[in-house]
Every structure is written in structure tokens, then in C-alpha cells.
Image 1 (cartoon, rainbow, N blue to C red):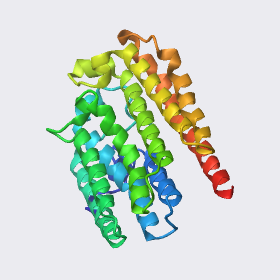
Image 2: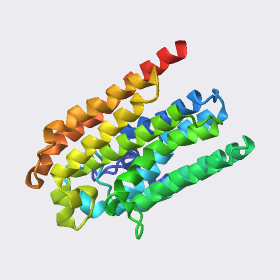
Image 3: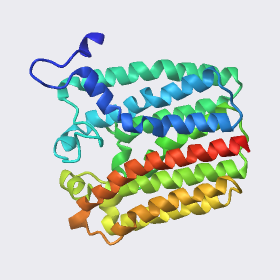
Length: 303
């Protein structure tokens, strides 16, 4: 397998290593690793083996599995998508498809086994169930025959599961109590993630319809999907407002996303590509939001 991941060939085509890293979306690594680590520590877990193994798993292997499968089985539509080729995802060279799938499975399997062992040793069998749901959602989103990404409504819910399930696993693995503030925060995270996925699909309405790909945005249309996403962000803010201080202060974060996409609330299908500017702003807003949340957690911990 290592022979496949070689330096760039003389013909100038990208190397296997570059393709592997690119398909894992490095900009998004933190989006799955951070929720697990933060939830694990906040739920009472310590700096231990479970924290390290879980964080490393959700940092790289999980993202390689999630986006690798997507890039392999979406290759045809990716080639025709002008957004691909930068921070929004590589166009995976066909000759690396088998390598990406092999490495995705090979890097994921040991971590999954380790997390299952750690969960059972901690007498937290529900953590095994959450982990199974998390991995299954990643595979089902893009894998042939399942293709949840092409089932309107289920596409956004499955995508949200990709990001919320690491946080749920962190809470359960640490033996944390499912109090209302915890549940409300997880539900708010889920509403935020559903809204984000739906808005992300808006920019591809015309391309997806042309390729015969269904999504929540192709069914509802650009205008209604943007407004649905705004409603999702508003719901997330309302849920966070019920958690009590200081967590309730985080309600301002989904409001920022709502404000960010509001200019697109009257977007027509014919001009759906304009939403790409809002989507790129979303990617950077994630970094700002992550920083703000981190500062809030530090202040709460000190308090």
C-alpha cells in the first residue's frame, strides 16, 4: 500500500499522498475532532487514552473515510463542478480511487476497534452504538445503493450526524449525564449542522439537477432552502438560549450564521451559484466561531 503513496510523478499529476491529504479536507479536520474532545472533557473525561485515540480518529481517519468515499463515488459530478479543486474539495484522480478507499478503511479500522475496547472497558456500551451510527452515517452518505446524500431531507440529517455524533460519543464515552443543557446543546448543534448542509447545497442546484442528483435544495429550490437554513440557525439559537448561563451566550453564534446567509433569502434557482460566496464565508466563519467557543469554554472552566 505504501508504494501507491509516492512522490509526484514526472508527468506532473498529483501524487497519492497529495490526493489522500486533499481528499480528507484538512480545513475540516477540526470540525469533527474538536466536538469530540470538547464534549469528552466537559462531560468529565480526563486527558487519557480515550481522549487521545478519539481525537486522533476524528481528526484524520474519520475525515478521510467520509470525504474519500464521497470523492470516489462523486467523481463524475466533481469533474463538472467548477467549485472543486480548492479548499472545497479535490477532484480525485481516477488512478487513486482504489488507494483512497483502501487507506480510508485501513486507517479507520484500528481506531474503531480501539474505541470499542475502551468503551467496553469503561462499561459504556452505548458508546459502541453511537460509534456504529457515526461510522454508518459516513459510509451511507456516499456509498453506492445507499447514497443518503441523494435522499432529500435525509441528506441534511445524515450530514449533521457526521458532525454531531463525535460530540455525542464524547459525552457517552466519558459517562456524562444527559441533562437538559447537554441535550439542548447537542440538538442546537444538530439544527446548525442541518442548516449548514442545506445552505451548502443551494449553490449546486442547477449542477445537481443537470446531473440528475437530488438534494434538499433541488427539491425545495434555492429561495426556500435558504430560508429553511435561516430557520435552522434560528432554532439552534433558541435552543442554546435555554441552556442557562454561561452556555446560553453561545446563542449569538448561530445568529451570526443566520445574518451571514440572510442576503441570499430571495435567491432564485437560476442564480444559485451566487451562494458560493456565502458558502466560502461560512467556511471561514467556522474558524471564528470555533475560536469564540474555545474562549467561552476556557472562561467557563476558570469560573
